[in-house]
Length: 392
Image 1 (cartoon, rainbow, N blue to C red):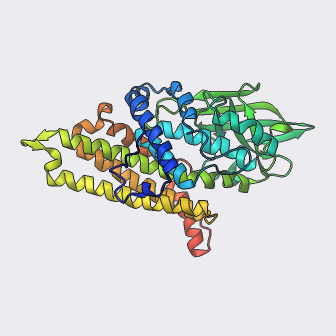
Image 2 (image 1 turned 30 degrees about the horizontal axis):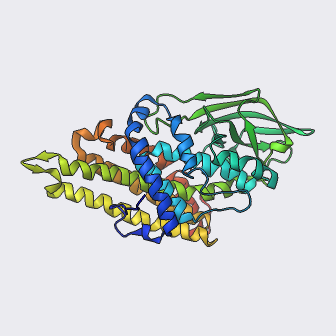
Image 3 (image 1 turned 90 degrees about the vertical axis):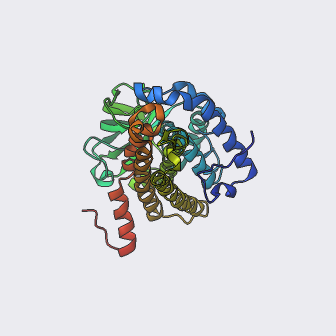
């Protein structure tokens, strides 16, 4: 399929991609436009995830672009970012599914698993044979997960017994495994476990009545004397620092998804502005509508520059926590502005799913908060600036 640059990539950042990467992105874009975009509003409205897209996503490589069994990254971080952008540009719920599967679940095993664990699980997750989830956030522990984790792990011989609860866990109603992070009762350190969801004592209950990312199947998880063997403990996860290493990789991709969500809303608003007529001409011919669209494009362009640069730093081994934190905080804040301006440009129809903007507008609220709120990311950057931690 021929690669056509996005008009919303105003400064042509896609030109940084190789021809092979452009070809892969074009194939993904074509499939998303043809097979996914027509169905997402209906699934969002019903609060259901379109499971039929998992196999094609895997076949297109979208679940395996990051990791393989023998090296940390198969493709450049810039390319992986454009994949996240492309998914979110069509639907943020689809991007979130892939981010959990490819970034958080597979990433936990890739970063903190043993050679044997990587060989067993990464190919199965990449193919979509196994669906993964990532269990860190708890009902009483979100931003303070580093110290406030309440889920416990107790070793008994060659087994571990897990007890506790998790909340807001994406993919968890249909996942085959969930990466559970728990505090070791013996040393107080956070450790990770690959928990098959069929294990006795493990239950996942869908969170209902959401106004954002409705197609994502978030769940409350309870763990009651869940027994897992030592072979399913992530062998290189020995403290929260190892958990944070996973989040460091994925936080930047959330920023890419924020840019994609902005672009999706902006493109829907542009299309509407060209066809909707008021006062005898398309509303896109009116100055105030053009002003809204230009402000959207300015936010998108600035945010693209930031995510591209932070991904280049990741490829070079130069990215630090404060870099991904600033990127996530900035791009999601600009996304919030952008989707609001896009909704404004579409007027009353901007609150109706049929015009797409409403979905992006609502979904932006979840992206703004998950994988580190703006406030927590601000404190990470503030610590880097001043040398003083102001978390409590």
